[in-house]
Amino acid sequence: MATIELFNTLGGKIESLSPVGGPALRMYCCGPTVYDYGHIGNFRTFLHVDVLRRFVRQQGMAVDHVMNITDVDDKIIRNAAAAGLPIAQYTAKYERAFFEDLDALNIEHPEHISHATGCIPEMVSLIEALAAKDIAYRAEDGSWYFRIARFPEYGKLSRKDFEGIEDGARVDVDEYEKDAARDFALWKAAKPGEQFWETRLGPGRPGWHIECSAMAMKLLGDDIDLHAGGEDLMFPHHENEIAQSESATGKTFVRHWMHVRFLLVEGKKMSKSEGNFYTLRDLLLKGYRASAIRFLLISVPYRNQMNFTFDSLTESTNAVDRLRTFHQRMLKGGFLDGLNPEIAAATAKAGCDYTAALASDLNTAEARAAIFDLVRAANTAADTGTLRADNAAQILKVLALFDGVFAVLEDKDVEITRAALGWAEAEGRIGEASQELVATLSLSDGEIDGLVAERTQAKKMRNFARADAIRNDLLAKGIVIEDSKDGVRWKRK
Image 1 (cartoon, rainbow, N blue to C red):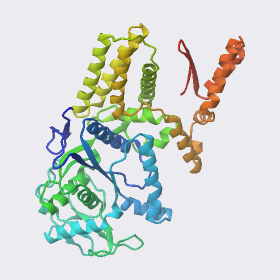
Image 2: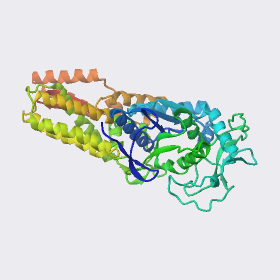
Image 3: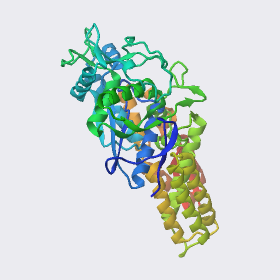
């Protein structure tokens, strides 16, 4: 098994990744704040965490993975109030949608899902431990704050210089300016009309940062192996997690920090004002496939900024098709018995290069390249009749290894897109779906098979006008017929 080397944001260098204190890698990933549908930037982070956990397990290491659900914060309270709904009812819709999107992108679920609202007692106890050390203090309005000046190492993760921190200068919003260093809210006193919990700290609700520390330590212990999230969480969220956790326990909170870089869209920062803000559902309604979206979002290594374009999404669709077609070709067989030594060597090299690439700081681009080199070599050999049955068996093992992490060979795209259309219809948003997509999915696979068979029969009867009419009708509905020496195939665009 390969030694996994991963960049550690804390310290700024590549280090070996291994569990301490047990057989399983104890990892925590910041999950969603369930106030809206997740966008593709969010899912790029969750996808790269999925790549990590799949590869870690593939290399024989168990994983104990916790993801939180932030189901109370400033945005949620504001949006729920605007919608006239209780917080729990408001967040339930978006939490359900989040897990539907995870499944659509073939992202494995963590071993533990922890809701912020389910860990209030643990948060209260943690704040009390900080208060006993005079690191947490109560403000005039009944809120509790963390005294940053009492944690000299503040800034060690983001490597920002916070010299001259003013003790007692407070900020009570959950998200604030990147360079602000203020005592942050641990517990927010109850405000009129807001949901609150009656606790030993007084009536109120938790601040954002305390949630993750309490949940991570409850489920994984005081010192955990790895913490992951998007780079936007490095400061202040992760910096604050470190400060409050290490102040309470006196231990290193997390040994290894993994941060996934931002995603651009067509070269610009994604934002609603730019008109380039996309959720997974937006893309599905445009007719793009979930598998192609997954493959694209993990194609660029996690530490590189990714520029998402629709051209690259089309290329990703073609790449997935190529892999699936190649996989089916190897499964179908029909090759002569024996082994082609040259292809055997290329297959072994592809497997080794794939593993080495992912073991080297999760280099997904090089891992993909290794497999496509094999696809080219094997297809050429198959075309010239020099690929043998034993080669195909070896190639299928390497493809299974690759798909254990990249997870795109199984075709569930139509089922996922149908579900997206059903959601759009229920939400009154079916007008956002592409007309070609709606037409394409108006036919079932069985109905298409029937039309393709009718076309084949029409050609045999030399009724070429009917055969062409069927082809053109299917093409108008986004269904492409391919005539090959192996027979007739069809696919949805």
